[in-house]
Amino acid sequence: MITYMIDKIINYKTVTTKEKINRLLEIDATQYCNLGSDSTKSEIQEVKKQSRAIYRAIKQLDPATGNLLLEHMDR
Image 1 (cartoon, rainbow, N blue to C red):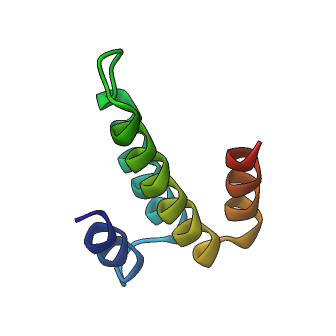
Image 2 (cartoon, rainbow, N blue to C red; image 1 turned 45 degrees about the vertical axis):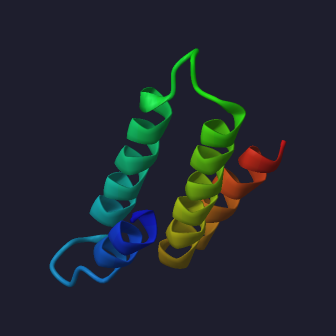
């Protein structure tokens, strides 16, 4: 599901790059907000995996920002 949403946003023709990045980051923030103290380790790992996919998509749009996000995630 997340890869479909990422592809859909990246392929928008009438939206600026900044707006695409904002929409992708909004999806990422929503995922982390939906995690709670009762989330399992597998749920947390799945969100991290999806975040990495979002950051890679951002890297396609803006390499500097994408690299920054990916490097921060690796820390």
